[in-house]
Image (cartoon, rainbow, N blue to C red; front, side, top):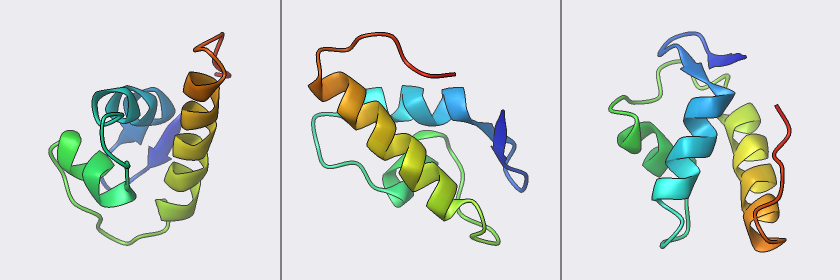
Length: 68
C-alpha cells in the first residue's frame, strides 16, 4: 500500500528502512533518508510512524510474521 503519495513510498519500503536503521532509534526523518527522499507535505508522517512502531514491535517480539 502506498503511504506517501509525494514520494511513492509503500508500507513495505518503510518496514525495510526500519530494518536497516534498527541499530539506532529510527525516526521518520531516518526512514525518508534511507529511502533517498525527504518529507514533502507531511501528511504521511503519522502513518509512517505507526508502521515503524508496528515493525519495531514485531522485531522485539522475535521477528514473526508481519502484517501486510
